[in-house]
Length: 594
Image 1: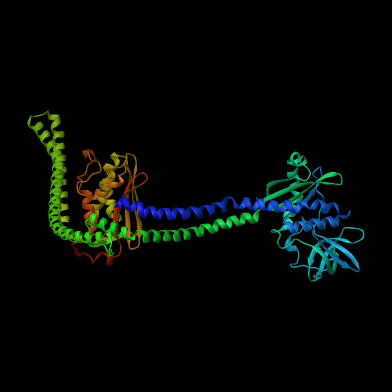
Image 2: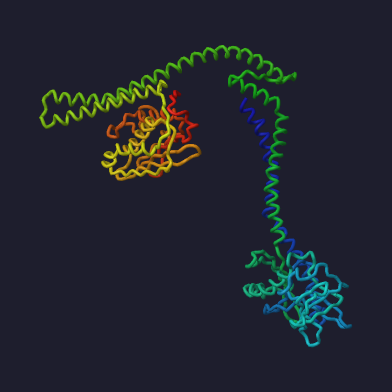
């Protein structure tokens, strides 16, 4: 049945989705990788066709530079490109295709618009023939007919320009040639690029350009080094007055780059929506076709997992409907049988788990107690036999010291076990009071001076000035003794142990950190268990009974403390909190049993 579902449902859904998705992906790939090339080819073709007729029009012009400028300006507006004309030595003709012609005192005056010094924003918007304008500028010919404009405005400015050496003229426009609104952004800048930047580029292409045949075209792609904008360059060679000339058309590719970027951004937003719609349509399509088979497969799958609560709901009068009724009958009979077995198994499993847990706890307790008592008893027996055999007199004192030391260890273990049993029986009463923890820490630290000196370990205390807490001082002293003893035992020689305190809301968090071996991360929570040690070999030189942290856990639980252990960069840190506020900890000297 699973194999059938894979072939019919999954493959039908996948085939529908993949087919439509690939079609959509091909459209996106075409936009991403071929749209810009298509635009470039179309633009180059348009420029080439427009440039074919230019040589004939150029040859028919009278020797009048203004007529040539007007012809070039018309071509630039028609093709949205910057135009340059160069001779055989690739020297550019000086062209000023944009101008304003005004009539002053029955005399025509030409206002040329320099490419390098003008921007589109310097001209009033919407200028046309018949508009009255005011021009401040400088005449550049002897007859005062050609003016270089400095400022052009529709209304006469109030400032006096004679002091700056300028001449002001107010007149009506009789003719003009300006960049059309269809031109690319800031056409003055693009036209000035042709005048300034294309010259050096042409020199690098000198051999290829000068070897062109008359009437031929070449196209190249050029990047403005200042703005990074890409341009397309089309060069056409033609014959003029017995020599060779070249016309260059430079058009920006920025609009298509912006369009591709916009299409890419749009696709990023549209693709998730299209994918969701495609998934839904594919799902609905496959669901409608394979619905009866999927329903039966679902019912059979639930029966295979021993779930008979849901019956197949196909009521058609065909093979699917008959199979559905047979499955429902089988499900009802199996369901009743399994319920009876499940009830019996649950009771049996609970009994077995309880017995296994009790047996495991008993074995662990016996093993731990036996291990902790076996070694000291063996040592005591060995040294007692030595005394019985009348060892040398000089060894008797050392033998007695060892026996007493081992007896002390066994006594400490037994006392810790009794203490721990009281905690586990919830028979410990806390007697809370307000007291400064620093006094307890100082007292405990003094008792460890010998161990600290033997390992050359420094003890650093950083506690807040006000460190009164509401707790049982005797029990807190037990905690500090156990944690500090643990830190000293596992500290590296000639290292430092830091005891710090910091306020957190209504409590103080105390932290005891040493420099030593890390505790494996998977054992950080188990160290609070009784008889648990990170060192599985239980090396006796490390000291301790294995019950200290378990006792600390019970004491801190009774105080409602937040405690834990963590690995630091250089060692291990234990921390716990104690409340400062009396209202948070109960009444003074109140016996608590938690």
